[in-house]
Length: 149
Length: 394
Image 1 (cartoon, rainbow over the protein chains, first blue to last red):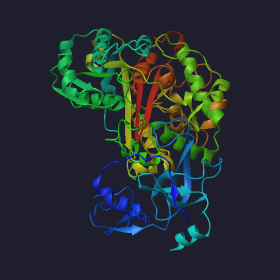
Image 2 (cartoon, rainbow over the protein chains, first blue to last red; image 1 turned 120 degrees about the vertical axis):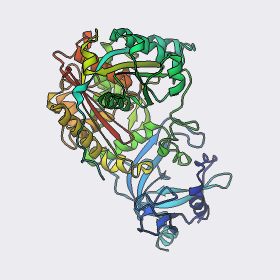
Image 3 (spheres, one colour; image 1 turned 135 degrees about the vertical axis):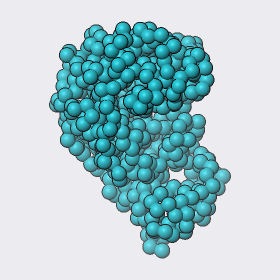
Image 4 (spheres, chains in turn cyan, orange; image 1 turned 60 degrees about the vertical axis):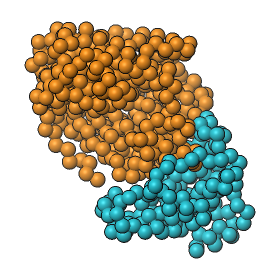
């Protein structure tokens, strides 16, 4: 499968040490989230301790790569050089539980689309930086296979 | 969730607003648009303070408490005003009013000045894009920028789209907010945007971040607001018209804020309900007793969410309520009677407080709500829900 690319460099993420394993997992196309070793709560964004049980012990768990569409918005004004309008960003509920925000690669859905199945794809910018992104429909057989791995 | 357990403990009849003041928003807006800098955050705060003091009829030496807004440093602001209070702090608009009440209730202060100044327009403060403000407090304001999600407007666009999905409100129904508040602003000499709007004007305006359009967004302008709040005893001896702070309530939803959990799954409703209930119980009144409501409106969709959360209509009914009952000075429940952040001035909730006071005083001229006895202020900025009931002093 050819990699999905983005023509402009992505904005820098907020520099937080807790996020480093997340970004490494994304760069490897194996997005992972923290799972609390104390209570099992899966959290995003990463943090030094669990907001539920306050345990500092956690592991990183690769996600299944599926989500359900919760909401979205479409920028008609350009705020950031990498995202000329119209640019659609979605919020999806990952199979692991947390909400996740990412661009929606196949454009704005119609009203009533909440609940649609989303899959996580990976997008690479000209500097080689990778971001996870949502697709509304699995992009074919390869994507299906990735989901079930 | 711990929301819903609030027990009112204050004796809210114990505090009253005895003075209000503000800068000349419309004139300063014209000047900043022309490239001038009519003031700094500190000087706007000072101008508003001078007017609030004059309005209260008391001397500066009587001020023994000070709360400064988030946009000027506490210590420098106190120095610039020559104030040596025995109690002080820094808060946003609604937090400042509530903290002043608490300071007065506990005897930490008797006369508290609240001062706010913001040169956000002339200083070109950015609420979206690479230099977006506020990320130190709310990670959600900056965390999703790599994916292109930036600006507070986008967060409200996500929230309104989710509400549309669940409750089927239309964008035309949301347009009632911009139209109603512009009507109010058209009757307010100091409002920045005074040209009346129709629903058609609203619908024809461009999207900024769909489903929100141009007129769903607040203004960005310079200015200042100040209030003087005193104990009920001191208020009775003041020259100016005192307006009582009859009830206050607060409840927060912070868990999951960065990924919008309470925003998108609850619309902050449990926090609004708890804050509203606490303030209603304290004041001995309810939504049915309010003659007007001032609602924090950085974006228009705050209004339908607040109407539901604070008990003015049922869950999912806000669109119909706004369309059929009305939310304007001409029809139904008057909301944001000075024009609000959308049309009067974006003073981050501060101007809403003085509008509530003036409506109860009955000095609002063409935009006065007849027989106005109780006004509620409510807000839910990023999950911090507050309610204040203003009314005749106890």
